[in-house]
Length: 356
Image 1 (cartoon, rainbow, N blue to C red):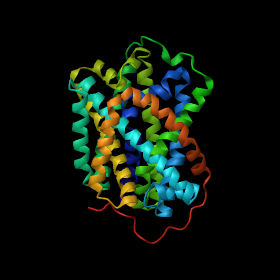
Image 2: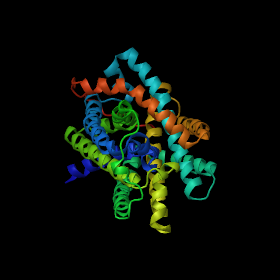
Image 3: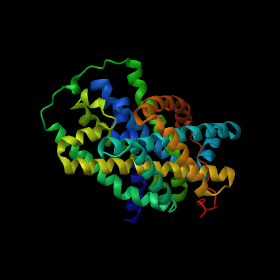
Image 4: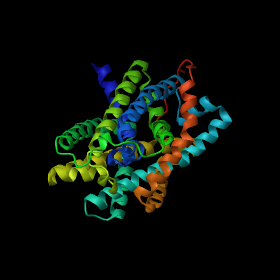
C-alpha cells in the first residue's frame, strides 16, 4: 500500500510540475491544441504518449545515474562539454518559464481578484520564498493536496460546460492553421514541458530511487496530464472563439458557474501556478548552488527578483512568444533522451540534499 501511495505522490508531482501557469490558465491549451479545431484531441493523444514515455525515462535515468541535478543528466545525453552548454541554455530558458509563471499569478490577481498585477507578483514571490525553505518535502506535500482538487474541479467544469447549449460547434470546426504547425504542436508542447520539468523530475528520480515506484508514477502522471489536457480542451472548445480573448481563459469559463465556484476555481488556478513556480525555482536553486556554492536562499531571492523584472512584459505576451520558441529548442533534447537506452548501474552514494 505504501508503494502505491508513493507512486501516486510521484504522479502528482509530475502533474503539478507540468500543470503550471499556461496549462492551468488554459492559455497553453489554446495555443497548442484548441486553436486547431477538431484536430485538438488527436494532438493531445500524441503529447500524452510522450509524457508517459519520456517522463519515465527522465526519472529512471536520474535514479540510475544518481544525478545531482539536470546538468548531470544533460552531460550523460550530450557529453561533458556540450552537456554543460545545454544546461547553461536551460538555465536561461527555465528562468524565462518561471517569469511566465509569476506573470500568470499576476494576471490571476488583476483579471479575477480586482487587485493590481504588481500585487500578485509580490505576494506570490514572498509566498514562494517562504515555502522553498522546506525543500522537496514541501513540494511533494503541496502537490498531494492541490493536484487532486484541480483534477476534480476540472472534471466538474467540463461537465458543466458540455451539458449547456453550445454557442459555437468548435468540436467540428476544421483546422484553419497550417497542417505542419498542427502536427508539430504536440511535439513542441511535450518537448518543452518535459525538458523544463527536468528541474524537478531529476532530483525527484534521485530522491525516490525505486524503479517500480518511478515507472508507475510516470504512467499515472502522464495519463493524468493527458486527461487534464482533454478536459481543458473540451471546455474551451465549447466557448471558442470568444474565450480566447481572456488572459486566463479557464477563469473566464468559471465565471459562468456563479460567484463562489468562480472564486474556488481561480484559487485552484493560482495554486497550480504557484506549485509549478515553487518546484522550478527549487530546481534552479539546486543547480546554481552546485555551480556557485552560494547561499541557496540568496540564490532563490535573486531568481525571484529576475522573474519579477521579466514579468513586467505581461503574461500573454511572454507565453505566446517564449513557449513555442523554447519548444523548438527542446526538440533535440527530446530526440536524444528518447533514443537513450544505456542505463548504468546506480551509484551507491545517497542523493544530494539542498543545504540549509
